[in-house]
Image (cartoon, rainbow, N blue to C red):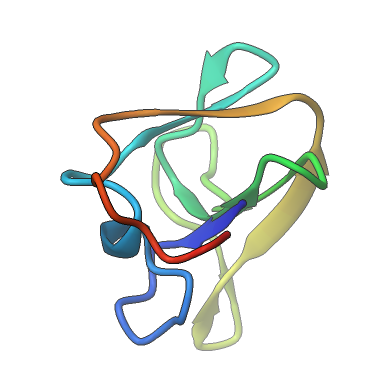
Length: 83
């Protein structure tokens, strides 16, 4: 299943979960995940500098796509759209 932090997305997390789920990559929480797919094993997340500030590419926040074992933890909705 793919989920997104974008409320305009057709895979926004709120369609599947009651509250924002915890996204884990190889067992590690991904606090800046903006999209994740547990079937493809991909997380797209914001990139932060060593001091914790978000990095920019021009006027856009820099993002990276990383792969591994993706897991979602959270209370799922009883009736979710098919993933």
